[in-house]
Length: 327
Ligand code: NAD
Image (tube, rainbow, N blue to C red):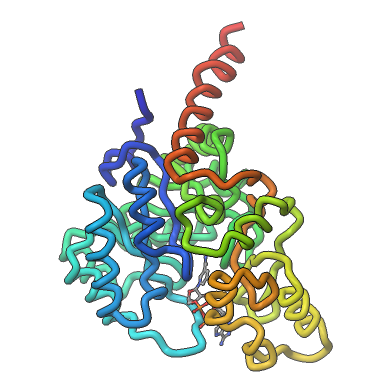
């Protein structure tokens, strides 16, 4: 029983399901729950205010699971400068063996990670970045379609196209990321050549996710139309939940003349998103959410969610798909 792919083998996990890095959400509670349920949990590096705090969070996570887990390092524009080298060194010093990099080219960090025997998964929103990641020595990539939460890049290509091209061109294993939230998605991703799936938004709507119940409930109620694209004019596009703040940002961006980040900074600063997750005040800031909110209609435990997705995918593969070719 169970699914075996290159990714379950390389990451030494039971199910081909990885939890993506999520700012303010990737704490030990969620990452350990995903790992304990047989997937791969990921702590978000920059959610910790300093590299020393990250080392403590990794220790806390080790106290909650004896299964493998990873750390996300996102390299994108930030309001305050981030000491990326110190975060990378903290990851190495902590002995964590899996890193998910995202955003800019992770090449400067690869010698450090490779020297420490770390498996590097780079999140890519395009085929050219996936090929580059393979070329510079990343062990696998997470192919992030336009459906995804957070930063989908500027090409606007969905996973129906990205995944089959990735399957044709890549030699290293890859995860399908963006739009994944159920067994149909897992079966489809495997059929399109992926070795597993990466989920973010779906894991936000679980009992263990460390965010306010009202945020989870709002995502349960939401449809696939409830996300907005902001920062398009700054070429740092982000898909966030559609609320009054996202609409305000879009309105400012639509004004004539060039948008300056300073014009929207007070609305979008990450700290306000963190406060929103704590308070449940849904218009206090912005929060990342993918189109997959349209597929979410309950708040299960992580264990229930992962078991359900795997069982559903196995059922589709063994019954529906086998029947389709045996008639
Ligand atoms: P923050 O408070 O520093 O910035 C808030 C948002 O503004 C972020 O999306 C950031 O990319 C953007 N931003 C900052 N300076 C900018 C500039 N000069 N021009 C254009 N955009 C700018 O960020 P945070 O919320 O503390 O998050 C920390 C890091 O994690 C950021 O790099 C952020 O992009 C990233 N992040 C990624 C995802 C994702 O892709 N899933 C989700 C949330 C945050």
